[in-house]
Length: 84
Image (cartoon, rainbow, N blue to C red):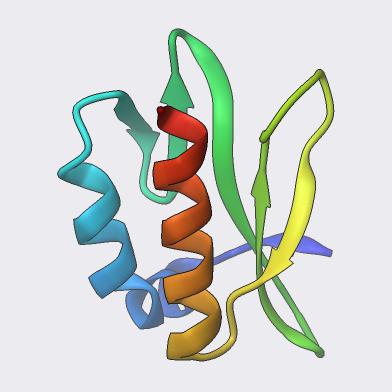
């Protein structure tokens, strides 16, 4: 699964804009967010659609589908929850 390219990130732009508004996150490259100096969130694309890799707890990332608006809203809610 490859990292999301410019066209995929364009589709995610409303979500990316909301993420940029969270003071706890720093966007190091477009669509690649860090928290406390550590990789926290990035996006992938493949034939099955768009996915986010989010570090919720521990050293590993968990993968979440973000193909549609409902899935993006669920991811954003999870991110807010993990920042508390």
